[in-house]
Length: 94
Image 1: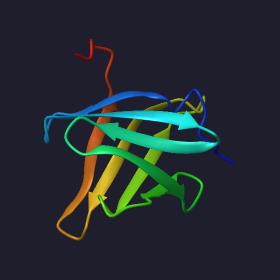
Image 2: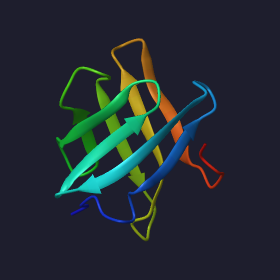
Image 3: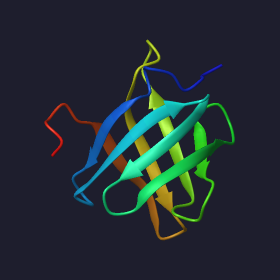
């Protein structure tokens, strides 16, 4: 079973959307934060699939590597925008 942990936490970037997302784990829940869209709690639907508690996008899927580290996730926004890739970003966040 995959459980969000320190291996999930970090800053991720989508070049396609020019959007940075921060994932945090607080009180056994996964949270997503962006400067454009604020902070959203994510509800776990399956081993690696999460949905926002509030209507922000339809699905976030974590893609852990063989060590359980999450360096990539995808977001679906309804039926038109699917598989938008966010990769772990090691740059400086301002």
